[in-house]
Length: 192
Image 1 (spheres, rainbow, N blue to C red):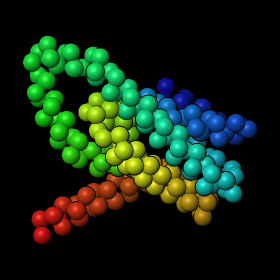
Image 2 (cartoon, rainbow, N blue to C red):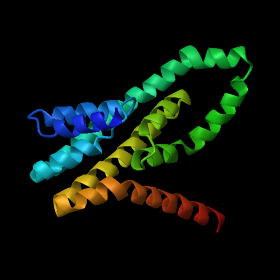
Image 3 (cartoon, one colour):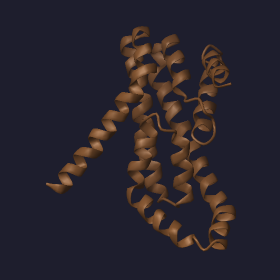
Image 4 (tube, one colour):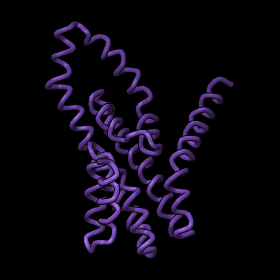
């Protein structure tokens, strides 16, 4: 099933409504869809390199808006379903502790989820569930998703088709290593 969704998403890149398809995929991927918009971005930039940065912009804006939908889903579902269940079992204090810890590091969670292969949708919903500061969520999402989509688009614009395999197989790993080094360096600075 995932492979057929991947193929469908890739085939959308050739359509005249590709930007709308990209916006749709980027939006729903941020809360429920399993295929990342990178698949469309790759095909679209290879087909129309002169539109690389427009494509990155559309993906970023739609992804952040979709992230807000995921945030709303987490917030509303928790308030209507999650909180009453926790209260019924007397576990709401445990959630309050988790919420405080998550919100302390929430910007990092959004950055990590937005840049790495970790599903961004999990972070958007969890951010709503814990009521992470909305401005922190939005800024972190813009930075993470923008960086991810602009780097992919720039690489394809600059190097064309030969870089495609690298992006599909290794860029997620490189973003993950980058985030680990970034977080690790801040941790190191904190203890020096």
